[in-house]
Length: 160
Image 1 (spheres, one colour):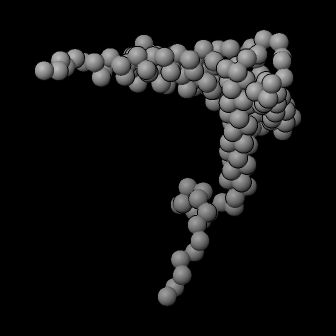
Image 2: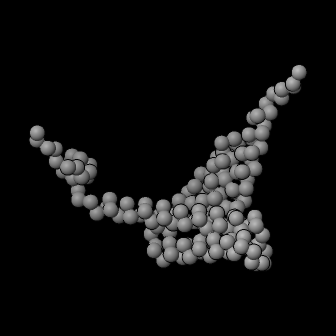
Image 3: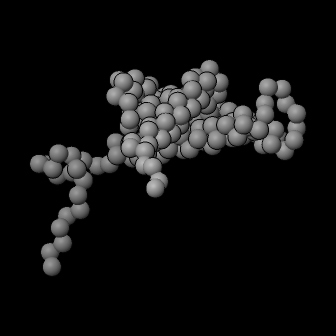
């Protein structure tokens, strides 16, 4: 007769969440001083941890605010966006070189994969931020709607 472990599934799930959330958070902390989306990864790691651990919810709120501030800064400045994309390309390039067999100091296959993922994540963040900024600018330049519509521009109804 097979023995069933009560709560085994729950314990494994908690351990996986703790490891994944911890790794994302630690990678984000490292990227606070390295080029990359530090607070975005910290927020992602804390979000994973907050699904199982209530203590992670308070620092998650702080990290979300900081990540949003960073995204807004990149969105508003084309120079910052260009710098971030350039840094992302350098990260991806270093990772690809390492995986291709070029011996670079302090890099191994694991760090190469982290660099590539960080670079791709950073490019995605910049693209998202720039799109959001363009949408907000387009909204700000829309003509005001008729009175009583709270400024919403609506097409006139067709008389059929």
